[in-house]
Image (tube, rainbow, N blue to C red):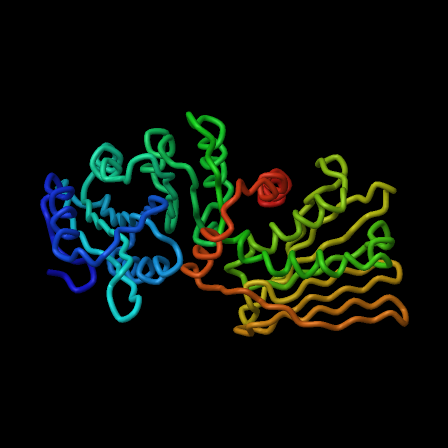
Length: 355
């Protein structure tokens, strides 16, 4: 018995072992609303992800499937464990969620779908959280069975190529695939803050006067900053296309510059500054005409500061900063659900700047 992963069982005996697990304690209820799979090629990920699932199941009832793949191993093998994450009610284990863990070695593309996904809870949607770089395992036979694909593009060494594979999955899948980049989720509270500041009618009148955008971010979270910039550009209807100088990138040390064009032909200059001491997104500064907006966050702070200034009209306020930890970001995403249509809307401009 593994204290983290539970009882090791033969793959062909998983369903029987699960029935026996529930039969041992009639006081427990098996709760399951989704299939939640976590895939990683990082050694030791099963135990780390088991602890993440333990936390997530406090709020999200699911059948969890944890997959650790060693594609470099010479011999093909598969091991499996079962356990249940139970939460107390009136001092008793009352609601529990099943977890099945798989350790695969060798070239295992077919086994990933045919063996692992054969143990999904039927008729429930499948959410797959892919950790790390996309690998050849991510192919049509895999993503054709997924309903929601969650990833963190901050982990990718070549995000342009990886997003090309994601685009292929969206367009060629046999059913609609909802995608969620945790880099996009990290920018949520900054986007919410900016939107609330532009609820001010005086600020709305100055949108066409914007000439400057400055974003400071941690180097690892460049994609979050680019997605935030793409969101601004799309919502402000800044013109796109290489002939209009969109995303003409100029790199100088720890800075990167972009140019956009307003509807009236005026140019908006945007600068990304990379700072090792910054929060994932540390500062968003928008200026033009009489408008000056700053949304900033200190590293590890639980709040963001919002400031709107237009002449004598000045407002200062605080708002929650959200979380940086991937496990908590996943929890936020599971709570919101939805088709993530806004991300799809900004994706083309983000991809153009990324390239």
